[in-house]
Image (cartoon, rainbow, N blue to C red; front, side, top):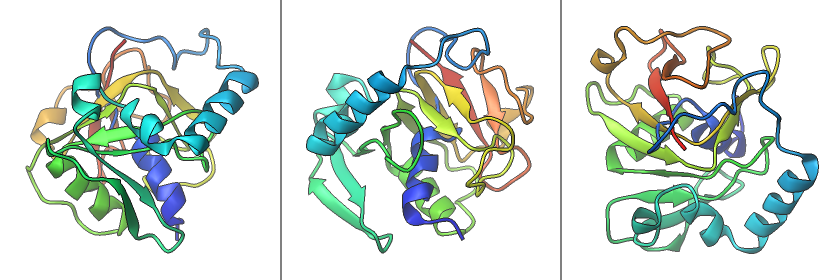
Length: 199
């Protein structure tokens, strides 16, 4: 069973990616990957200020009023700051490569907790998640994979729409998605969702 820390990494890096603005080429093979130095610097900054890290996942107007939580070693959540707008943000997950904080509305948080608990998420209860710092996932097909199918899937800034199978019709899916265009992550599982790149 996947650790809760790795599960949170999923949330941050998973196909919950749908954020505002323009398309990113970060997932394309020809796009340069972030340098280890940049990743190390971001990780150090996140460790020293998890609230700032968590807020970076969403637009400033959302992050400033969102609750901020972190996972404890036992899988429970620790509240670092109360929120007032219905969104909950989480800082970068150090268990995954790359920088991957996330911020989600109430429905997306309910979906994420079901995923982390290996439970069935509510049907047709759409939720929205920001990952404006991008993310990484071990697999685009297996929600509980802890090791890459081939390579880690790297997604640039994106948003995710979760909790609605009806919304996914017509979007591509599969093990090696083009992350510069909208696609379905974890298709055919209870946790399938739409990933939407933004810049």
